[in-house]
Length: 349
Ligand code: KG4
Ligand code: ZN
Image: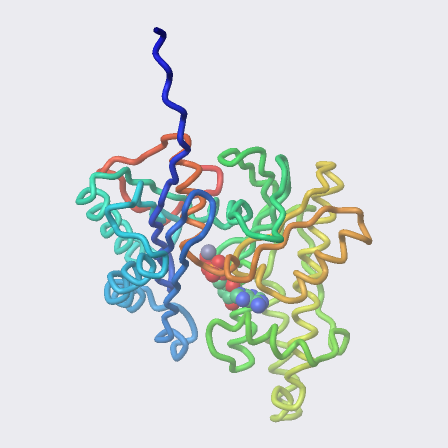
């Protein structure tokens, strides 16, 4: 009698993911492409310094990492012996911060005898679009992704999960930095992006105008805008010391309108140059209400098909590290225990 083959039972893959590239310690558990838990501990310590203090960030990661991982496992209702692999952020980011997550992931993977998966943080922001979520559509390849965070501003052509090409990028500051520095000029706490966004809701976006930079059609530059903004505020405050407090909403709405208009213009150029109309946004600044609104409008007004990430997958989180971990697991792309954290890593590396 011929032997009957066992039916192939599709087994779930459970990935524990760790993100510690900057000032958020995060751990997540994914069952295949679905997020079972995603815990993020924000480090409030940096607010009083007006920016991330690398040494304090590493120390806070050290304090947070064990309880955060335990909480992620508990929320997912998964025992560590059920894990299929451990994924972690390999770079780019602050080296001291990355080292905490890297060392922890290496030890845990070794102790559990499961594969170790190093993840590129920038790829993770983009691939967060492939997390399985009800009512979230996934972009088809190729698509364009405007990746906007505290350290990066790029237009990326995404041809496949791990085939990405930078079409344009910032020549100086990142857009998140432009937000945070403008906020600092206004005396707002770090991170200033969400605060500018909040005050902008009640302001007039046309109250003040700022000159947009002139650079290549797909490139960005924000340092000139930041200086122009600083001089503008200094001049106004000289005439009226209460200028900022009196006009905070209008100032925030105007600088936000300028920044978002620059981003939209560049995306229009990228669509015109590539002919690709599937357009996504990713990274911390994609939490911004105006870019989300303007992108959504482009579905109707420009005939684009746009992809806006769920709010919790915009700023740094481990779920996005987990989805990359899952796709690398499917391809059986693993790292050895000799792998090292890398402060600089491009999206296409
Ligand atoms: O991706 P992310 O969490 O960390 C990096 O990889 O850099 O991005 C953080 C950046 C910060 O600059 C923060 O001010 C900005 O994202 N951000 C925002 C908003 N939420 C976060 N910028 C504008 N509007 C927001 N709602
Ligand atoms: Zn990030």
